[in-house]
Length: 225
Image (cartoon, rainbow, N blue to C red; front, side, top):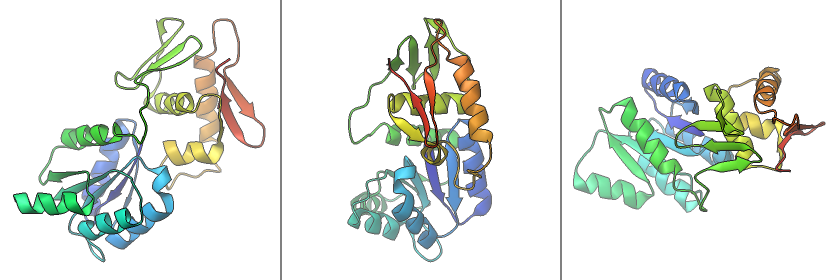
């Protein structure tokens, strides 16, 4: 999962980013409304949820919601606001916000709202993924291989989840970076390859069959057969 944070208080933006990343959620932040809207318009496919403050320099969260929806961009939007009247809430929802959170808030509640929004996909997705003897449960963050629990780091889990959601498809290196790491990640580094190799070693099937293939010059593919 990947989240965009639009928040002009940089300390708060950094706290949110760090809190999300501790949960294995990649996050980027921008510090004004115009930059936030531009990032969504250019890269909405790279994000699962956008979090925006209501009061922002250059463009407020309400106008971001309205303009994004006018452009038929359907990314879920969580608005952070200091206003809690019924009319304020109605206005936000009518403008295209999917949810709102009144300040001050706890990080745990932000995480819960993000998880709820990310469970509203355009199409129904399975609650559990399986490829051969490999099973992954996103809700429980559990993986088993041949019926035995598999220990993965958070980043390895997100990487495997991404591959299993796109099983038998060739995933380009750039797609992997865009969905698992943040916007400032150096895509030319070998970190992706290191994680791929670690994951490949851990999910090697009992029969010794390589499930995670390298597609030379393009990326990787998790085979279902």
